[in-house]
Image (cartoon, rainbow, N blue to C red; front, side, top):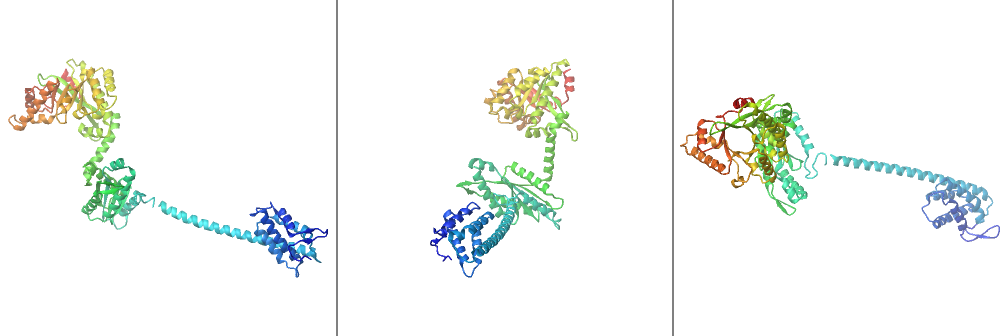
Length: 592
């Protein structure tokens, strides 16, 4: 029998052997059957230890099968855990262990069989336990991962909600949350008898801060303003709607004074100088105030009214609050609707022209006519220019409208040549936008060619501000038109800031003196104011004649005005005294 030492042992053929020899054979047999996280030397060392345990167990008294269980378990623990690895272990142990180690026992073969069975049993149990442990670990890992994912999801949803309802820069409620709170304040049960107010605030000229110091400084200023507003309107909901716009909700207010007090506190908070990134910045704000009963109010109407009122405060110079005025709001909505209807009215042919005579003060001849546009509105009736021209200028629609007026005036004026008498020229007002258009010369030249109207029978009226512009292109275009023979007149002369020296070099043929000077001539000549107006007019006429320009006086309504204008050598007059605006047919009758 073997004494269990690790020294050399005799074999039947007399050769000497060690447990290490068998361990190397065993290691070679199981290598490659599964992933082994150890070196070859470490594997052989492990298997040599297990070899010694098996050899001791085979020869021990009493025979203990628990050694086989432990060896099987250690094989699994060492990751020799495949079916192929177990098979090769059984094979090498069964064929070589007794022989290589020279083991001698009365029932060695029976013990070998039982020991290998114990190894297989321990192996199977360990593999089963490891599999169960791994499954449990996987289950626990999955549960942990799911719990972490759920926590992350809840956190993400919560963040999506610090983001969906709050402004990330100032941490104030945003438009979404404000709208929800506003709707709740209006629709909550039991609030039917209450009043509600809004303060819609916008910083004045905040773009200058961004342009001068950069958006980083601008954002820092917004954060400062937001914090000041939060403190100033404490107790009321403050939200940032975007950009430099903020809004305050004043619930259960007792009247307009409550909301005005909130607005004034906000204005005072904003106007205090702030040190931002080393810059001392001072800004102001404009606020639109709306205050009304909860009954009948809607969030949309309140916000629209507050926004309109904010624009009124801005238009008044800013750094102030303005209170909503329902009548003013209705008028502005009507103006907006009228402005929006202009393009369709042009397409439907709702505009037409009347003409007012420009009459010689020397002999009463009809020298020309001024084209005045009218709008035959399907609902409002005939509208005069003062109802829609300013709207068209604000929106840019004056360009297509003015083009139509010019084209229609040229077309109708050309037909007057067949009336028999001397045909008058037609005078058409050009808006600033028209004069500044690059294609003005081509437009006028094309109209003259297409209608056959001689250039000298077209007069273009330009305001003083347009003529005094420093831009070279408009003046250059007017010079080209003047060279073609088109008359150029300055309208409402004397009401602007005309540089008389500059006037000398402009391509102007006529000055139309503003009507407010002529109105003074209705009073008796002995009154100081009337005498002053007459002297002003006389000076203007003398100046114009010195520059080889003709003068037409606007707003002539009486024979006395006409006589006094004739006495100071004014060339022509325009006004009700000489004829009211009339259709083209009346002009034809007068020519005939």
